[in-house]
Length: 357
Image (cartoon, rainbow, N blue to C red):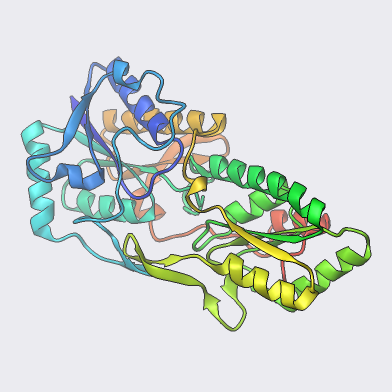
């Protein structure tokens, strides 16, 4: 048996842990693993790949990024706009399949987010032996309770808030931190709570900056002269909507800039000096946390088990501390969003965090 693995979409802490799990588990079965470089693009003839052995994965658990490279552009891009999905042309599918056939690949493990798994589902329906592994720092895939990379991203947010708090206290400022989260506010919510934020603004909860400003003024009157505000990039500015940048990201509009907008408006409303910081790709980079290393490895091992049992068309899933699997078609295009009345949101409000509503 020879299986292939590729990383598609954006980079994410823990990708190398998945590779480590796949290679280790496959080696125990006497299988050979072929790693395709730069996502699905590596499948196009003549094929861009490398043979992976357990020796090749020694020491990669602690490494961020991926030794195989990844891309969210090219011939297999599934996202063409906000919520829009494009099918990969049959000619491209046939060319890539020819590479799999030539290399005698018996199963292909696709590690990717919603867009990449949408492509994987199309390939499976075209007859490919595909197994999916969910990857997104946003933690917004409905069919899994947790995705690797999320914990690492939250840890980066918490570290950023810890550092911003000291300078905010020194100057009695309001510090606004913009974090990732296109559709879902999980990173902002978890990072904000753990990092001691005073205000958390997310896409799922419409916010009023007048209310936020009143909350900050109240804190000031109570002697709390420094405030930390966390805002997800996909949160909607009142009367403006989502703030975007020029260009696109994997077919979708690039988000960014809401932190500066919020900071400017809050300074006008409160009269307090306000500064904005954007974490950006710092949330994607660096070494994965121990949780993400273990979860990624477990995902890789389960992917090999699904290949062994020929359960193709399925995606590895994490539920109730247990790693299992679901149908890919049940996982894609169904985002897991923050419920405004969820226990976590109510807990945040109970300890005095303002959600802007």
